[in-house]
Image 1: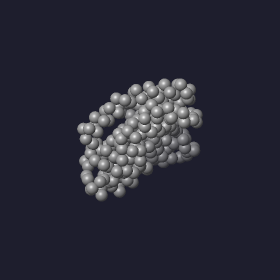
Image 2: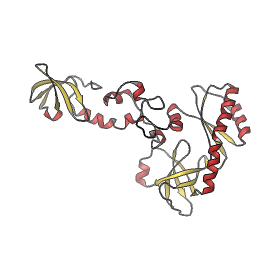
Image 3: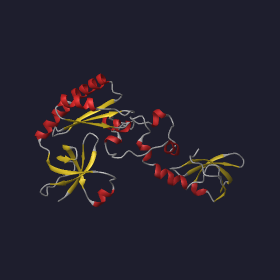
Image 4: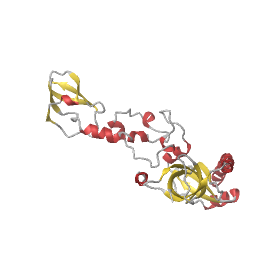
Length: 277
């Protein structure tokens, strides 16, 4: 039976789903799947080939039951209409119970057998009374799911500074580690308001080109290195990593921008700086 990679749920999880009776589906098809959470709507991304699976670090298993129908779309529309009232109920109960948490979102599955409450909290919380009262309100099973600030952006954020939908809500399945080293190496502004995403953390896109920057950086003489060029003996005082240019200072204190290929030899070098100046 063919298998497909399907994206499903508010957190846009990935699943490798088998099919029933050798059914086939086109890319982008809206389908009804049985995931580990229950019945829900998913979107077919591609066939689960060996090459595709090698690109995935983790995924859920499940079954594609059938292509979604207009009735399924109407049911999901009703569920979405109930989302805000359910959030209001959750917020009211959280306030009454004085729980130290921030409610982020409420998700109901297509089959109605489960409601998932997403929240952010820095403390360990006893949810027994809250879950009991929510289950009585909604007449279904309630599951509490703690998330981080990046996941909060994944649920709620819309567009980034680039004008495009935020990466965490489109194609990123795993949040990549991002550090200030990456921003410094790419000579991005270090103003937190400029390099922070909707989640308040460093932008994920700083990670995308870091490996290329690091590789190109290693090919250049480090800042402080003395090199021989057609202009004579010079000291490297700056680097233009992508264009592979060097800012050098000559012995008569002139500063020149030269191509890295103009370096004839390196005379001496100090320990390579972790970050270019």
